[in-house]
Amino acid sequence: MMLRLSVLLMTAWFLTACAGPAYYLQAASGQWKLMQAREDIHSLLDDPATGPQLAGDLENAISIREFAENTLGLPANGSYSSYVDIEGKALLWNVVATEEFSLQPRKWCFAIAGCVPYRGYFKQQKAEDFARRLEDKGMDVLVAPATAYSSLGWFKDPLLSTMIAGSDIRLAGYLFHELAHQRLYIKGDGAFNEGYASFVEEQGIRTWLESSQRHADFASWQRLQRAGDDFAGLVKQVRKELSGLYRSDKTDPEKREKKAQIFQSLLESYEQLSNERWEGTRYYAGWFEKPLNNARLALFDTYAGSHCAFRLLWDESGADWQQFHLLAEQKSRLGNEQRRKWLTQSCPTIAHEAKL
Image (cartoon, rainbow, N blue to C red):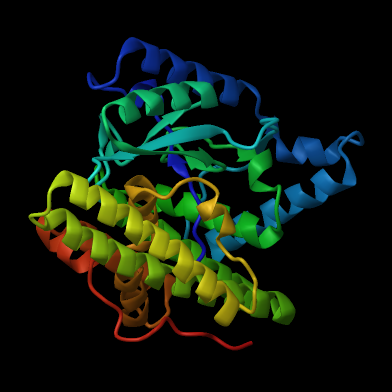
């Protein structure tokens, strides 16, 4: 599965009493600056000063946006019809945190978005400062860049330079994922929201590549998906081991020592997986660039933990996009506990591999 970080932008309208004035100011200022910097995509394409690389990327975005609307049933609301060069590697920086002996992420609550398992900052330094304060309290912390975002339809979100920095397949994934948030969003249920959007992203790319008969690209993308399934299985096993450890009667020092051993085992298992199944290709190598901790596992699970539930829902829909969205909307109306149980079901088989 393709995983990457997005954020539901926390503007002034999202703010509640759990965030102070300083957070309010940075969120409102960042959103205002972003909206002021927007340039209409068609105007840029008509401008002779627009370089050929950027023009090609913008044309791709228009085509993918139309595919999302016409084939995937995603909203046609004017989002991603403008462009902003953010001149950096990320628009926002998200802070994810857990207790030292827990895999459950801390949540921050906002009026419209509800409670979400991360807190976003427009300035990396501010995110790092906040993360450091949480670390001083003994928490496991991760600061992660967000290269795409959705305001849930409150604004006409712009296409960002970070979204077009890679391949057109990655761009398609970003657009499908963020537009899915605008189609269906449950206040306060990050696992459902990110699971739904991540599945729409993955299956949307599959549908898009199949329709365009891009055989070589499809084969490469499928290799990445298989590697993603392998890696998700590895992370799932580590989560299981840590969950058992944290529930045990061991002392804190004993838990701390065993926790370090489990994370070291994860690194060793990754090396073995890379060498034996991926022929030396180091998929997800960036995941290990910083020390492993609970926060990193928690964020991964937010996006990948409910993949099986949505895969089975896709099968139930008969591979029909409109029916799939309707079924997902039905699941969104379940009670919190019913929905949680549905989200955590296991796949009886590995996700299907369509052939071109």
